[in-house]
Length: 215
Image 1 (cartoon, helix red, strand yellow):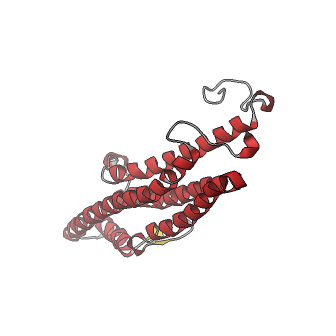
Image 2 (spheres, helix red, strand yellow):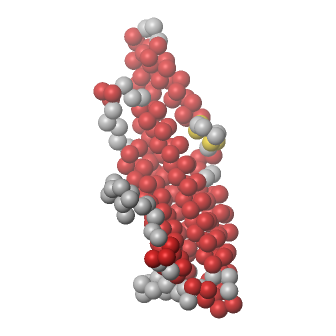
Image 3 (cartoon, one colour):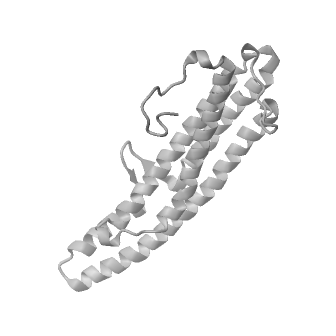
């Protein structure tokens, strides 16, 4: 707890002070907390996308939106990795004769997660590079924004700015709606991951069915 409160001292528990079963329980809880945190970060994104409060800070609305779109894909990838890691952990730890059902359920769910997230990543037919994101509307907005800033004629600048603003607002709403819809799709993926395993692990009763090696 020392690192949480910014105090000096050891940052890990003495292994002799807790049992392997306690380590196992802590690992399960940590996986679940990480998954919940990743989901909540994605859930918050539509709110951020629809609100822009940096007009006086010389932050481009388009850069702001692009940042959050890229962050969305990044978080979807992280969530998939965390879910896969959690289910693989369950599959391996419960791969014993007495708990084979749990292991098999986790293995099946792991495949389902990978298939489901493949569909989520197909959003809008986008193309994500290693470092950036692009689609046709994003490219269009990039050039409209440049024209609105650099056109020599005030009338042209105003025209380009007006077209940029109307296109941007529509694109902004579309992304907020798309992410909200994908949050619902992600929740449908999560429901079986925890719903099917909860009875096996006795999570609903606040108990954890330990693998035989930890009993």
